[in-house]
Amino acid sequence: MEKVMGIGGFFFKATDKVALAAWYRDNLGVPVDASWHGAVFSWRDNNPAGDAHTVWSPFASDTTYFEPSNKGFMVNFRVSDLDAMLAQLRANGCEVDDKVEDSDFGKFGWVMDPEGNRVELWQPPAASSAPA
Figure (cartoon, rainbow, N blue to C red):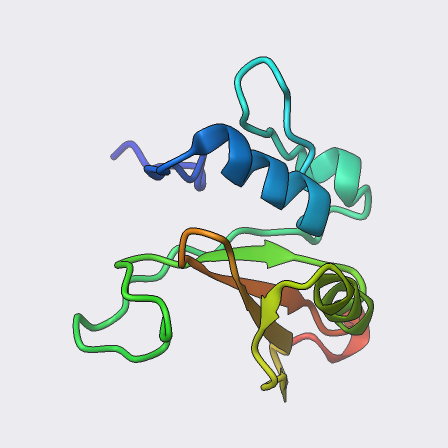
């Protein structure tokens, strides 16, 4: 049986793709390529130790986890320092959720992008305390 190897991309509609790409570049440091307004993340470049991964997970249709967004998706970005990222977003005037979750899976925070998409930010736990 053939199997997928992982998530190859996250694609979504935008009212103004140029402005939205600039917001992600300026506020989250997404390495946006100006020629096509998208980005490519190479895990090996960003994490030579090789423990980076991407999660794919359906949610129940009545989940409230994506609120206050009314969109049917949410993107999660891995960050190295959640507190610093949230402080940067607040300093940039972004709509940052006051809630921060700290669990065995790491630390989570959220921000809304200019088009009403909820963005989850995830700081993985230290390797020694990562869940199996």
